[in-house]
Every structure is written in structure tokens, then in C-alpha cells.
Length: 374
Ligand SMILES: *Cc1c(COP(=O)(O)O)cnc(C)c1O
Image 1 (cartoon, rainbow, N blue to C red):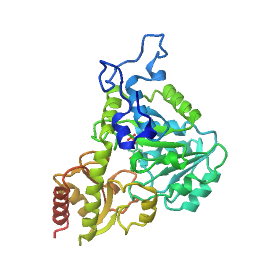
Image 2 (cartoon, rainbow, N blue to C red; image 1 turned 90 degrees about the vertical axis):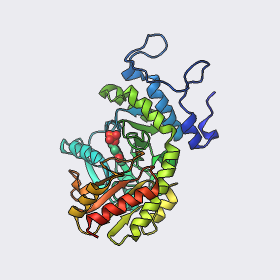
Image 3 (tube, rainbow, N blue to C red; image 1 turned 135 degrees about the vertical axis):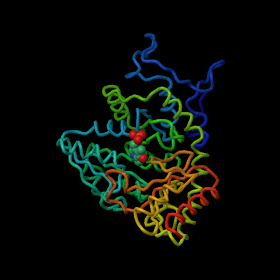
């Protein structure tokens, strides 16, 4: 018998949920490559009815937030399914600092007059409370990408809403271990499972979790009609990744705190953004709403784009690569990414992995020193 999620800690749930509990059965639901099933047991065609492999992932992540989950082919597929729920002429409010794929999708829909888009600063709590009263879709992302500003989700998710409005929290950076948006009152908590859930840079998947039965049904229908279904290997790997999420996150977070503190003391580093540092503009909010400060750090080196590019070219243990949330540390200059030119030119975004912290620091410090000719 499966233990109920409210009887055990999230760390134990991640390890124990979504398994097969029958004598002789494998402990893990295997990747089941099936488009269709023999009729008669309630499961016919996979696109609409799902597969046991997807359901294992949904059971793990849904139970983690005391909701029901729908797994998608990517985080953006889950995002698109949520925008798919909007009525005509809807008002959408997005954060000023927001995942660029979400901005791109929202702006494309606005150009086709499917909805209108407004932006609110992540830390403008009063602005978000107003948005809840006026908007049909309130889209929050916290900590934000790449400035790592923390929104006061406690206050925002509790604010009175326009009738029928949905509040979505893109919880990718925090993961459900650091932040539980549904518990605070959000309609949907979203994960790009490509990042921390998978945790090994080897898959694309997304998961939307809700406690609203009608929303869950609507997301399932959207997935069925648009065909945004997860691959069976990806769902299997994402579930396997989730098993170790708690230890990976704990270790990477420890590393991140240490690197953030050392970066802040480094004479060639002009600015460090990490929610765990007392100098971070939303540190107090982070202490209140987050269980952990995460594994993402943004920092600027003295000089400009050229010096920052040289840091990326100079790291050896850390990889010069985009994305985040994996066991390996990655770094990139965000303003070099198309659509991100508005960011400070020397801003480097570091996703801290689970390597040894001293090795990471030695690699980073020597790349910074060589890049800036110190
Ligand atoms: C990566 C990411 C997404 C999109 O997820 P994909 O799996 O790449 O489609 C959405 N939101 C955030 C915050 C992300 O980091």
C-alpha cells in the first residue's frame, strides 16, 4: 500500500511514490512504449488516456504538492496548455523579469489579438495584488530568471481575484521542495521538469499541478487535443531524477551559498545576486517564502561583455552552457542570448551543481582572474 503524502516528508515521498506495489513486479514503472492498449480496462489510446509511465511521474509530482499533475512534452508545452485556457480578450499579467519562452508565447498571442499583456515588477507586491483583481491570468515566476528576485507569493496568492482568474506560479527555479504555491493558494504550480526534476540535462518535460479538478481535466484535454504528450523515456527519466531531487538540491544549494559568499568578497566581481545573501534586494522575502535559496547565482565582473565572455571561455570544470538545475554546473552570459539584450552586458548566470565546492570555486576564481587580466 502506498503511504499517503501527508504522512511522510516530501523527501520520502519523492523516493517512494509512483511505484508498482505488486509481488513480482519491478520496483519502478518501466518506460512503456505504447500508443494503444487492449480495450476493456479503461485505457485505450495513450494520447488521451495516458500511460503508466507518465502516470508514475504525475503521481510523484502531484502528490508532492497535494494536487493532481499533468505531464507534458516540455515546460513550454505545459505553458501553452495554460494559455489555452484563456477566454477571448483576456488580460494576462507577466513579471518584468520572466522566462523568455513565456514572454515570446504571450507576445505572439497578443499580436494576434488573442489576449493583452501587461508586465509588473516581480517585487511590486501591491502591483500584483491589483493584477489579481483585474487579470484573467496572473503569471508569477519566483525566484525570477535571471535576476533571482523573489515575489511575495504569500501575499499575492491570498489576494482577492477577478472572477474566474487563474494564478499560475512557474516554480521551476524553486522546485516544490523550496516553495509550495498551491499551499499558498495558486491555481497551478508549473515545473519545467527539464531542469531540477530531471536534473541531468538529458530530457525535456513539463508538469502542471493543480488542486482544481476542472483545471486538471482541462489541462488533460488540452494535452490530448494538441498532442503535447511526454515521451516514455523522458517520463521515466524524469521520475528517476525526482527520486534524488532532495539530495541534489541540498548539496547544490550548499555549494551555491558558499560560491555566492566568495563571489561577493571577490574584488573583481562588482555585483552578486543570490537570494541567500543579506545584500540581495528581496532577501527578507526569500527568508519568509522559500525553504531554501536555490542553486542559481547571477553576478557581474568588472569590465563588460568581453570580460564576461572570457570567464565563460575560461572555465574548465564548469560548463559554458545554458539551462539549469542539473548535477553539473553551467555558466552563460545572459545578454548574449537572443531576446535578453536588455540585461546588464556582463551579467553571468551560474547554475551550481553538485561538484565539490572548493573545486568549483578554484575553477571560477581562476577563470575570473584570467578573464580580467588580474
Ligand atoms: C526552462 C524553463 C521553462 C521552459 O521549459 P522547457 O522544458 O524548456 O520547455 C519555463 N520556465 C522556466 C523558469 C524555465 O527555466
